[in-house]
Image (cartoon, rainbow, N blue to C red):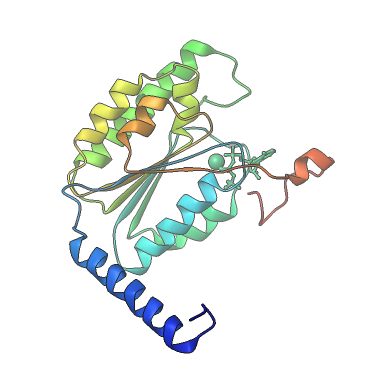
Length: 201
Ligand code: ATP
Ligand code: MG
């Protein structure tokens, strides 16, 4: 009997199906909300989190976002999600925390304020999903302690939390349930192409 034999194929598929459904039966719901980390050098960390926000809103779930870096651009996602002011709370906490400030004390203060806000949102029990966009950058520059972020996550209850940004701390990735590293294969930026409306912001 060869693998191209229809009877053999049918049997193989049946075995696979049984194994899959056995696996599914053994799956369980999590005890707490899930913690997801989107990191790596490739493009897609924040935009993937925005995709999950759309998914949650689609189910009528409540969502909060804390942006740890204040972008200087008006973004498409912010304009789009402004349509969901009932279900979505969007906080830009990077007041003063941009590449332009170069003032470490001011940056630390802004990052701490943002973490405080994140902690309130995460522990409130009011949200199905909280996104901490670019928090890994604040951790990378030691504006925040990983332990302080994990302490906030510990109080999440049923709330799912997504943390984005390059160079995620190993300790945070250990703590998380799902970690995705975006790998850069190519980026238009390296060909000298500036950020594009609708693609990059
Ligand atoms: P996006 O918001 O598009 O999902 P990101 O969150 O993965 O991107 P960030 O590190 O937050 O990436 O960078 C934000 C901006 O920088 C975006 O405009 C993005 O297109 C751009 N960018 C992302 N990856 C790279 C890269 N490898 N080189 C240059 N620019 C990049
Ligand atoms: Mg990003």
